[in-house]
Amino acid sequence: MKRQAGLTLIELMVALALTAVLGILLAALVHGWLTVRERLAEQQNEPGVLEFCLALERRFDSPVLRQVYEQRLPLATRWLDWQAQNQQLLWVAAAAWPQAEGGSRLQRQRLRFEPREQRVLLETSADLYAADKPRWVVRERLERVSEMSILYFQGGSWLAWPSDQPAHPGRGVRLHLQRDGAPYVCTFVLPWGRS
Image 1 (cartoon, rainbow, N blue to C red):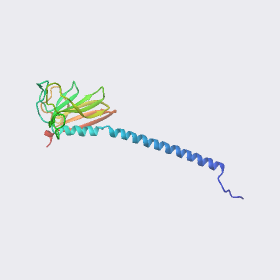
Image 2: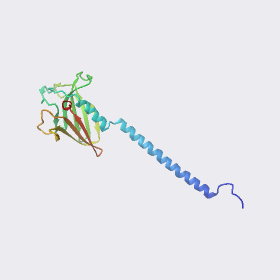
Image 3: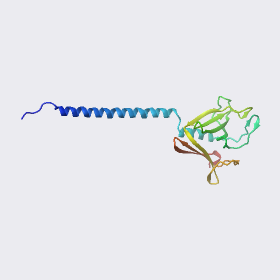
Image 4: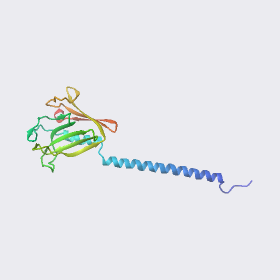
């Protein structure tokens, strides 16, 4: 019997087929990895719900009961002013340092939901005594939000914000969001409610 020294044609074809399959699998793996990397890079440029809620928490840490004016008329003095018709929450807070647009440590804060654009905006204005309408500066934005609601904690339970608002909003505020079809809840303990 003679010993075979090389590869048969069938063995060579099987080796080439396995090499081709491994190449296709490797190409699919690299393509998937690059796609995930691109998505992660896009998400890093756009703030997520956690970053937005942390920025909002810093604004809720220092509320101030202060009279504000619009068109030289005094507005109702409330710790937090929920305006359901405009889907916005207004309050005054002390900033960490004076901002460039007025130099005041006390600034108006506005959390506003725009359902048509599907976004929530966190805005500030250093103009407490606006002769016309205050000039708002967008500090944070959260895109792709389809729903937003705000609750407040009083008497041991979370309540929807009524039209006849209490003078004091209680111990906390809760923000419910629907973003990309997923529900999110951010809860904030107000400083005067902490023990």
